[in-house]
Length: 398
Ligand SMILES: Cc1cc2nc3c(=O)[nH]c(=O)nc-3n(C[C@H](O)[C@H](O)[C@H](O)COP(=O)(O)OP(=O)(O)OC[C@H]3O[C@@H](n4cnc5c(N)ncnc54)[C@H](O)[C@@H]3O)c2cc1C
Image (tube, rainbow, N blue to C red):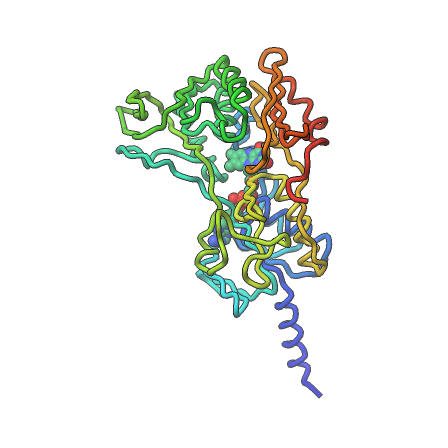
């Protein structure tokens, strides 16, 4: 007869083998924990995060000024509240520094933690433009609450704000900064803003709407240097022009955070390469969110995360489930000119057909040779047609 002690230690081993460890407390980590808890009420779930574990809506970082939100008032719940709400264990301010996929453990500075299944939800990191100059290190970027607190602090004394990067996040910040009376300049290499997402005509509509509200555009150029000049910063552009700002914000994009995956020897490309079941190249290790690449797609947006989390939760609970992505249009938070875009796939063959409506309103439909709709961009009042055109789009991943 085995002793009671042995039975208990065997039982705890089984529980440990079945536990789920999630790295990251962003939208991906918390959405997965919520979905998994619904399906597996008793499953031990442990979440480790570098930050303070506050649950907040990251998209609100670029329209929080207009809403009067600070880094303190943006969170919807603290780590303690999330622990109680989801019945999980959360360890904050802790970096996972290594993963042993053979031993099924993750390491932090303090401990080694066994996992049954491990999920990397480690997000993306800002790309830093290659700037020189004695104030290049004073350029801000905003990708989390701490960054946002730093920006809010800088804005207490800054009136002129220069944004490097006229993409989605740069344009949203431009609009948000206008809403609190800042003088905004946006710098970027394209002929219009958002030229990687929008057809030129739609980018031009957004550009002129924001210009009418006060944005000064420096397009067709890049920022080369940022130097101190008295209390301000002098930015030197690639065409030789210079401009002054009290605060410089970089929004040139994000790239998947691959540090831990590379250290572990997981397969990576643009993101951490995962299957349709969100599994990495190592058994029992999964990845989700801004860090992951599913069938060549890196989609750093909210909707793909929701779909992926809803597929991974049943897989982790025992029912293998593949992720499918429907069409997922992106809505820009630019009240000066509402924009909704569902860009065609990179390899799509077709052309943009543009219809100008009133004012800044424009309907751009990307159709193939047979007339099939493969993408769209809607600006101004036409943005209200989002549902109509979304229904016609093919899924992103069927
Ligand atoms: C300003 C801004 C506006 C946006 N607006 C929109 C929008 O309007 N619509 C939309 O669809 N999307 C938008 N997005 C994108 C969307 O917010 C992201 O796709 C999403 O929040 C990413 O969530 P995530 O959990 O994958 O990553 P993150 O939120 O970045 O979370 C990563 C987590 O991993 C932790 N971590 C990293 N490394 C480690 C480690 N080694 N050990 C422990 N923990 C670690 C971090 O602390 C963090 O908790 C916006 C993004 C930004 C920055």
